[in-house]
Length: 393
Image 1: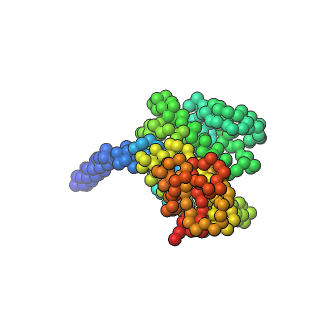
Image 2 (image 1 turned 60 degrees about the horizontal axis):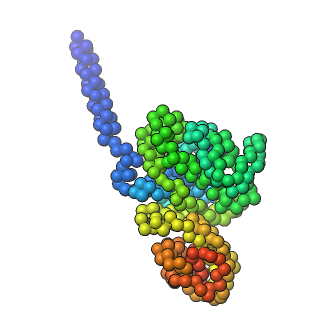
Image 3 (image 1 turned 30 degrees about the vertical axis):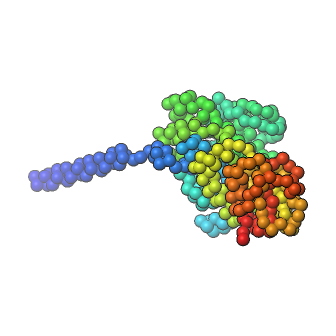
């Protein structure tokens, strides 16, 4: 009899403990703040890694920096062949050597370190899921400057030039298409076009896409750290974004062969890409800078020193920040002491942003008598104070 009483007491105690645990879990869940709503309420940017996966490796990785306050965004391309010292592997290798299907954490941690900013969330889509998504959204519209006629996955791929709407199968072929003869900047633009078109479609068809049944089908084709309700809220935010005004940026550097593998080593030991991200996030938060970025400004870069190739290397820096360099060349003198930015059309705010890229303290009006030959908005004349990255005293 006494034993029965002890047993009942233990059972009663277990019930009480379980009740407390269940109630605690319920309260914790009730008090949990949905992360996207929290970011919007705190008026801060949301950085999301977007990965298109193919055979267990990232075909393209983009960092989408989005500011809910003005619904502006920027994409930064992270090439899969970026070369880094991967400490966890104790070797120099491609950044995607860290990538594992279903567990992108180590890879994204390295991407975050490279960019010098936190990645709040990630969305991974494999190729089969991507093709399905495109079809669910009734195709994606992209602009092809040239007709594509090539072989992809042992199949002939023919895509017409101009503005075309492609179904999932053809968008998959476009994503896989490689042209070794194209400049790397063109290949980056093609990779970014994929997510530009996808996000643009989210905005165009948001009512349909966010419908409960359609969203359920979409969510099934995405691997993400977000719960369904948070993913839906994030897509609602992305739907507000004007992708035609998004800032497109890329990582630049030097290609080197390491043990038979060609790797892209980031310029200035990775500091340049960190500067790009920092300036981009500041611009997204700054209404005045954002207004400036709505315009397409062009640059001409002239070398006023005896250092050969300096203008071209500087052009790569500005192109990384999303500027269009229309001409590089030599200034009328190769003995210029101070670097200067010449503002041809009175765009003072934009001129200051251009100068800030290389920490140039000399901004002047006009560009007469500098040997300029291109109709650029700004002319940058490099002087002896420019060390290849910054102007120094």
